[in-house]
Image (cartoon, rainbow, N blue to C red; front, top):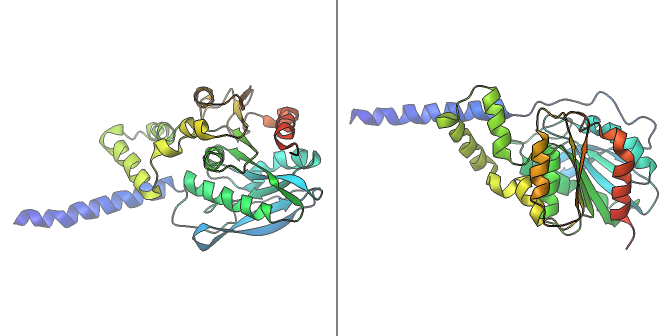
Length: 284
């Protein structure tokens, strides 16, 4: 029965591997070092899932204004979305720029994931709907990268989102992770395959169920997919893949010069973003 001694050794080895996976995939926490200058902002704490709270900046516009939850990407924070704040506020939008759990100044949690980003966006939508400055019937989402994938997931399971602007979304989490593993020289078989299976088990969702190339077909509201042509993190073909999977003419694709972290230099195309939002948010 000496083989029984191998069981705790194997279990211990898998436990160490699982710990290493979670540590290696954990998002870096970057605290904001700037604030929304020249805007009527104030800091807020938004109740979130698992009895956590999210840090955010609320920038109210005129009473009865449409409003947007603005969500950063993996390892980001609200400050990284500030280039959008002044232009969107200037054309009449109340804004809630959030830090996702385990990011910025928000509470930590056992892990961060695309579905948890989606939960945090939904917490932001609920908070916005209760604000006196906001028209609760005219809510939208702007998300970057993982935040964009989360915005699409939220819109796929809700009927009260009027518009989504997706900045540099990846098409499928598995493909994104395989690129990361390739860059880390991690062989797909058997280690990479184990990592993908382990992550899906931890987050409690199959990648296919949350992949933007699949959720886009379940969305009924207008969506603007924006992607930089020089994006080396998420190739522009992934935006085309998401767009090709749409089931509605209300999904638009905007390809612009720029990289991943400047989300396609979108500040040069704010007029197009504004026109898209105005069409979606027109009072019914």
